[in-house]
Image (tube, rainbow, N blue to C red; front, top):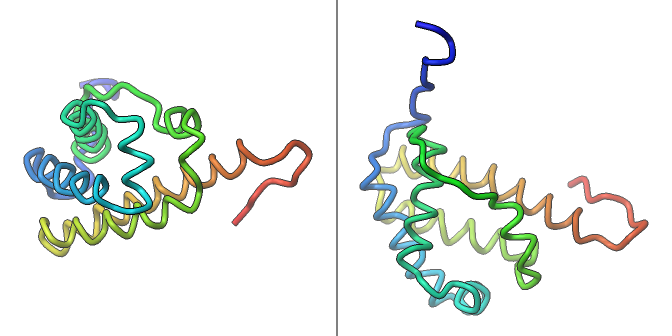
Length: 139
């Protein structure tokens, strides 16, 4: 078997169904959140389609399942209402929800991954939106 046909193992134990449950429950919380709700509710018209796309993203990242197509950084940069300070709120809500619906070890692994991705998105937004000539944000 060639290296091109060897697939990577999934990152941690979780099922596609568990990912779907987490994503669905999480976005119920997001829609009702006083800071995040207005940002998301303004741009997402079809919540079912959005949740399926995000679940596909997570299945690709964790289960190595093909099918997700998108660029999260570009989507977040395109929405000027998404601010760097939204990500800690998003991550706290995600962690809370993960611990409500997943086993503790799975919730911890999932939130660790979400935090890594969230830090990358925060860094990107802080630096791509900074004023011309301003130094990059390195923290």
